[in-house]
Length: 32
Image (cartoon, rainbow, N blue to C red; front, top):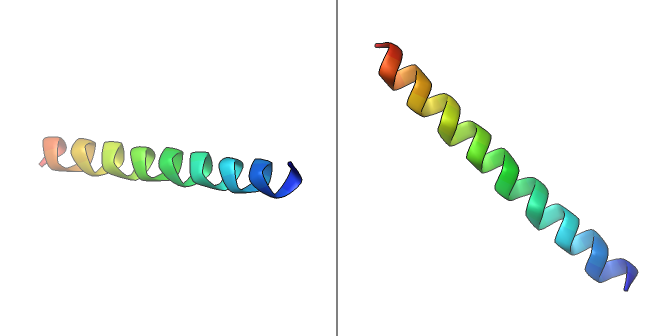
């Protein structure tokens, strides 16, 4: 269970990071 929990946490963290990066990119494009 521990390894599955860590993998799930890593996947969620990566998805959140990608969402923040894409959101930041959209804001940057909109500002220009």
